[in-house]
Image (cartoon, helix red, strand yellow):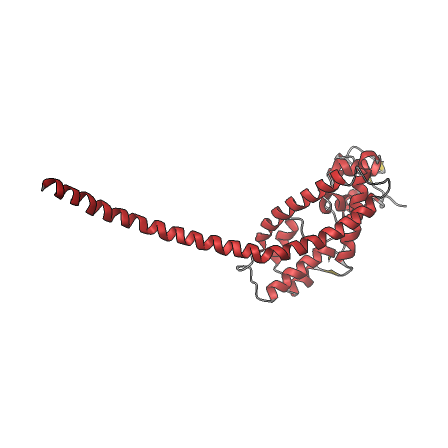
Amino acid sequence: MELIKIGELAKRSGMPVATIKHYLREGLIAPARKTGRTMSWYHPTLVDRLAAIKELQERQFLPLDVIRDAMERGGGAADDLAAATAIAKVLTKRGGTRSRTREEVIARGNDPRELDWLAAAGLAVPSGTDQRYKGDDLALLVTLGAARSAGLAADMLPFAILDRYLAALRALVAVELEMFRAGVFPRAKQGDVERLTTVATELSERLVILLRRKLLLPTLGHLVEKEVHAEHAKAGNDRTPARRVRRERSGPGRRTRRADA
């Protein structure tokens, strides 16, 4: 098979050259042949390896050292890799097979500025040589596009509000994975981590949806009650200075007149 340069590798993988060079420095990939100090040639099969690395790093949140160990030596990182593989399979199944270009999603209601923000946040990034949105990335854009088309304009539901969603969800996911790694990994039978991860991932998605439903109305009630208390407190504070002024004007005067009499 003919070797390719890094530019062609970047084109085929849909990944920036800078990212590929970073993976090179971290020891995740290696050139097949070097013909000079700055000239290297790469095997085309690295495209699949790069896709796997990106999936494990950006979608499954595994650090590069864990990915490197899992891909090259196995050992202690084998459970993490098995778990990540299972999670990836579940997400792929949920994401479907549809794909759309940037022009197509814009035509269906997505704002170009929104697309740029989501790409910078790593939430919706086109992939492949044809730069198409796929899987959950596309599902996110379809959801936001439908909201815009239904009348939820950017000034009502700004896309930057996703920052708050991300902060809350990252905390939730971190707790979930920490509990799973601490509770399941040490007790799972050899070779059973991937199956248990699949079960846990599917269960977690259902639990989050159900718990959110249970919390929506009570939380709304608490928010309304909090606002009402705040308004009452503000109204009380606004009246307090006036009462104090009246007391200061009338009280001492009456006492002074009684003393003079």
